[in-house]
Image (cartoon, rainbow, N blue to C red; front, side):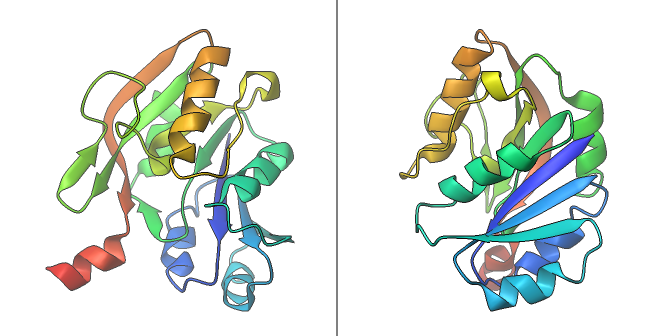
Length: 183
């Protein structure tokens, strides 16, 4: 029911990210060029397929666009290689997402929660909170510039005729390894 696309770039935090995706039907790790650390970590998980594409340095945009073409499930979610889903996060995606809408879940980043208002707006959404139906003609593209999560979400929102499902549930912890150090 769910494909999780994880752009990766040799971060050891990928291990925790992949542990949090173990209930997803399909996990696609797409590396930005050769990534030996990511490749070795990905090999340890049965539900993970690992790919390397030509290095772009475009904030994971090319990797996400590549992964969307390979997704085989009704829903697609996106997770950075230094973020994790909360316990029961995948179950919540599957029970609370709507097939005909851009689904925006909350993301916790240090002391801030993203989203905090009911609008598709720059700064009010982030990659780890976006879940979309796997309907290629209704999906935007990741642009490869800073803020590409907003670009993708806004394009998808328009293609889905401005249907959005705001889910008041913290799905993702953004960069939890940084939070442990700063406490």
